[in-house]
Amino acid sequence: MRNIHHAKQNDFAPWFVADILQHALATAGKPGVYGIVGLQGSGKSTLAAQMAALGKTMGLNIAVVSIDDFYFGKRERKALARNIHPLFVKRGPPGTHDVALACEVLDKLKQGKPACIPRFDKIDDTRLSPSRWQKIDTRVDLVLLEGWFLFATPEAEAALAKPLNRLERDLDSERVWRRYCNDSLKKYESIWKRIDRSLFLQGPGFDQVKQWRWQQEQSLQAANPDRKAMTKREVEEFVLLFERTSRNVFSKLPKLVDRVVLLDKNRSPIIRAQGPSYC
Image (cartoon, rainbow, N blue to C red; front, side, top):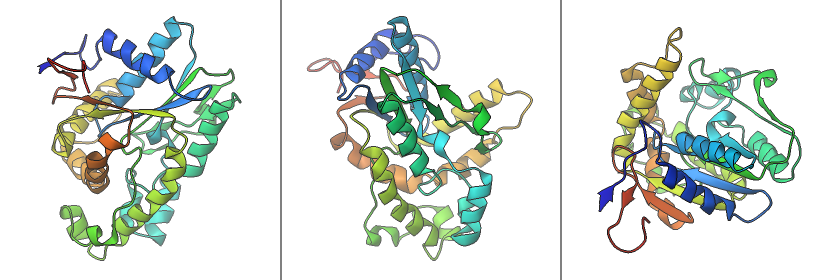
């Protein structure tokens, strides 16, 4: 195998973006919803933005939707923290998204109706006011839905018994938090059913996420020099919130999606010497 590096830092090569866009445009429905899934920091948002930009040069109107934009705001999460478990004050795991709103937005886009896509401020850790949401008034040709745990389903109860990391061991000894996260995944299936075709950006594994997520936070800080993003230690703690669901879905995804692209630790697609150009 050999690796094809990005055209410039953090970007995927133009030929790769064009190839994935053609795969996406073959989705069922008018417009179709194309799901892009991969662990945190794997390049989902970057790829989606490049696909939308390329589509624009082709006269296409492509809507980009992130599962992250449907996080509950601070007020809603504080209520979950009071009523369910203190860990829900933090965004991230299943149970901290507005599933009903996500379904409503996707349905409007698929039906060619005006829609407003919410926006989430990751530094302030809350949803922006509706006046700052992205308004889409014209019919779109394609919807790109990107997220780190698309297609995730609940684990068996027995799998929740053993703590997976120090967060679960020290802060969720009664399994209240992980049970609620696990049960919440049943609701997310209503989002997954709206995806017509999908791509998995398959990185080396969850152990790579800590580095990738820290790189994301550094980029976020660089883009917002007057505001304070998370520290490296805070990112390391934050990643623990995602570990159980990430490991669970990572093992199942290759069988659940329409296309798999292997990535190396630098997020570059791995090209096979024989057979298909890539998986």
